[in-house]
Image (cartoon, rainbow, N blue to C red; front, side):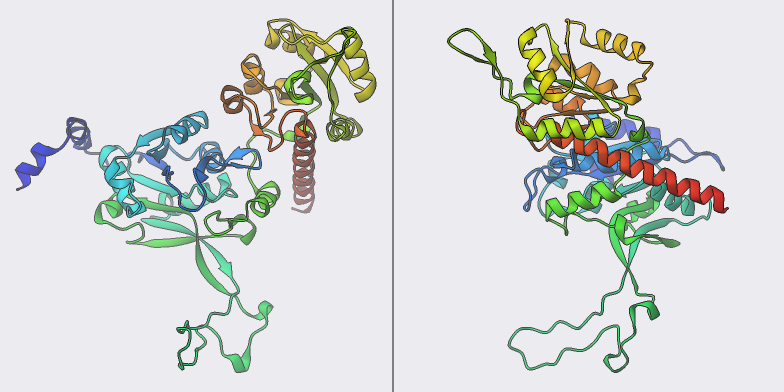
Length: 433
């Protein structure tokens, strides 16, 4: 029977099995992999794992935390869907294309993780990160992993402290009385007098390879890692997307770059500030429509010391008369760039003694991709083509000419405020200790 099973295994598994026979010497560094499971089928929200949350694909939040933690030898996304694969690669992950056998509605997470482990014999420790936990930060992963690498635990999982009084469930219409499960009703404790209970929040599970092969995620010498409630956002539970977005904007991880240094916003006129249409009067005069919400967003940035320059390209030129009117309306300089947009933007930055991290860029199409990738902050309107969306760090809910510039302006200001608050906390901490 064993021989028959061996003959039926795929050639790729045979090759990887031979690699797995290499015996690791004592003290040799273990291969630690992060693995995010992201199946294409979602009963609640279609393609939920790549749905935009605060301008970032849901899975992008945890991928950014995993990559920036610098704790993993490899970061993977296990999926059965082409679009999720593209997003995963764009956010720095390798892709495990899961088999149909573990892509069913009835398939468990453990089934998929075991397949991944079998196909990647070099992996020694796996961190299963839930794609639906967008408030995960790199320090959570680093501190949790140290319980395995420095303290010798074999599994560690994330928990959150809850102060919920629990009662026994009874069937409707029954005569059986419910019973308290974790309190004495005659002596109800005050919140401040009760430590509460530790509950899994589902953010991540670290396990050794041996445990996975035994068929468990938690076992051996196990430990928990407590996360504060503000970081314990689970989209599987908190399906009110707007509420989840507000939590993420306040407590999410936005990357290694400091957004407070943004000093210049470059914004395309056609397809960003306007909807891309040019109206021509009978007399030949060109006209465009500008939303007052967008011009207000520009003024908000200017009041906070961010210079805003409107740009157009040789492919979408703006007449001098129209440029003058836009400049008067917005208080911004309007510049027309040639075909080498990146080169001319870099020259503009050099004149102003700016670095890419100090520049925010809003574009809308393929010619903007290089600048969208290089800028410290970048955005595209909702109706931008896929090539631009994949390059941008923020995708607006609003369409071009209908509030996208205002939305991106608010995003820039929110990140600046968040970063300044963190800087003030760091300063207080240094002065105190």
